[in-house]
Amino acid sequence: MKIIIALLIFAVIVFIHELGHFLLAKANGVGVTEFAVGMGPKLFSFNKGETMYSIRLLPLGGYCSMIGEDEAVEDDERALCNKTALQRFLVLFAGPFFNFILAFILAIVLIALVGADVPKVISVDKDSAAYEAGLREGDLIKKYNGYTIGVGREIYLSDFVNPVDDKAIKVTFERDGQKYDTVIEPKKVSKYMFGMSYSNDDSKCKITVVEGGAMEKAGFKNGDVITAVGDTKITSGADFFEFIGTNSLTADTVDVSFIREGEEMTLEVTPNKSESYETGLTYNSNYTDINTKENVFGILGYSLLEVRYQVKTVILSLKYIITGHASKDSIAGPVGIVNMVGDVYEQSSEFGLLAVLESLLSFMIMISANLGVMNLLPIPALDGGRILFVIVEVIRGKKLDPNKEGVVHFIGFVILMGLMVLVMYNDIANIFFRK
Image (cartoon, rainbow, N blue to C red; front, side, top):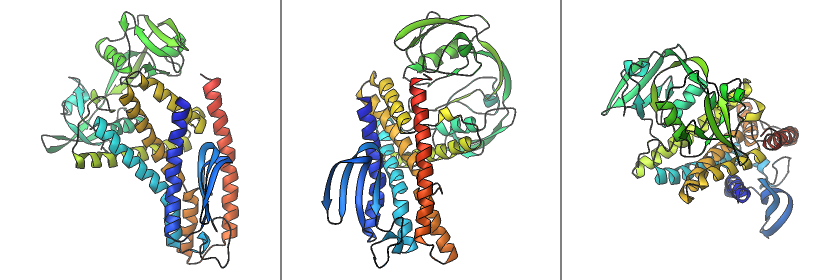
């Protein structure tokens, strides 16, 4: 079931992307020889007019093959290379744009179902930096540390990119319809910590251990599911969050029970003392904390903000990869994404069909926006690389040699396929050997 769902998600997202190219190609009189969903050997096909429509064996891609796409075709007005710069731009841009449209439509469905995750302050610790700055429960965060905030997760994204330290944080918030500007001066605090991360929601408390942290030293591994801390049962990430909020850790050893590969185990954990800077601010950071049901205009507005958030996340993630802040294990290809879909399905299925639908919709929004952004990168063989050639042509005022451009894109395609093989190998290694 997990594999089937993952393949269906891939098929829909790739189909929409290629449909964008196909429709704009037809609208601009470009000849399309094949419209394919999937890669590899052909499973099923039929012809209509000049176009063959096919479904291929490997559901991990697809393509819209156009006349004159990678080589010069003389005396054929249907060839893409013989169209105007604007027409070629529209055909190339349509694929990523349709992915953004799909993400927007899915966001509408999701927000209509669960509401919007407004950037609302849930609580403010007394004597904290945020409290001294004037923030109170119920305030809406509008700007945070230089970022315009539309959804609560953007505050988390800001703190992830720029971890809280001794630097002041400028905040604009709204209360009773009035906007206020303030500055949070984070305070240095010492506390004992487990050294792990998890999702603060109703899913199982599945952890990622911090390198060198108390959990790793105790023998915990990524993917372990916490079921109890001492005598307190833990059924979800929200339960663990509540436990930590009401039980301050000390240097004393704690028994932590968990499930690993179906087997329940218990290990002793000695929390590590850690110094950090904190604001004392708790805000709505996902769909399950505080959801507000919106009217039609609110749904449309928050759907746009959702797509913006996903695009921003992809761009910042690319920045982290390029600057070397992200490890190769944090990069996933098709196999890794199939595994993620399985995890999403497994964690949400115990809460019912609606929870599965909500989780998969959220995942599809992320993947569709990701595909849209990645395809706009100015890399040969990708839509963005082809668009770059069109822009250069407009600036030069002279058409580039389609054959030479085709060679560049072919080399880029070979390099991308090589990278894809490496990523897929890394995906398989992460699933089977680094679990």
